[in-house]
Image 1 (spheres, rainbow, N blue to C red):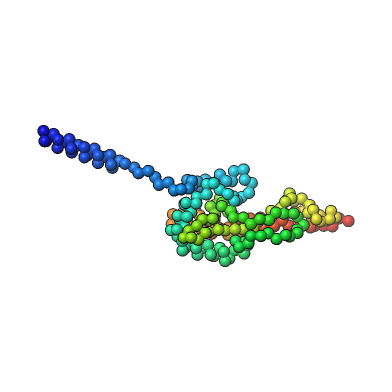
Image 2: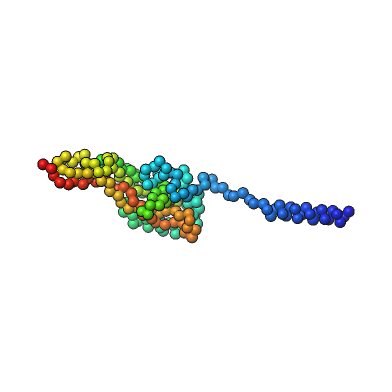
Length: 204
């Protein structure tokens, strides 16, 4: 009888050990939506502009975790962008009234995603905090309020004229989730800078 009990106890221990070894703990779920890294993000749908000012799928948790891991290196890149980008307007908040030959709209924006000069959507490091430091990046944009190529409304019809959209290159610190060694870089983006007027020949 004692021998049977010993065999039964041994079988129970083996069974429990097998159950324990096959147990898979549930994945850790941060308090943010699961990050999505499609070639074209959801925020770009029905959006004619090559940037997104709001993004429900922004990978806040991933960016914050990477910032915490590489804080000093990223801070050096971030300060370099701030110091050398001539059209950085992070400290500007108010628009000044200006008059142009072609009407336009001016705004200071903080893009969450944008298309770089290579035509690829990138995650911009924006509005994410690490070690009590809030990382933000802004840019001044100015877009024509008239159809590009139309006559300049403030120029006499005696002159040939047309409104043109002028762009400028802006540098942003971006997050690359596929670079596991150092998932940050500085890339160039083309943004609308002004609405110009080109005046041609005079027609008496």
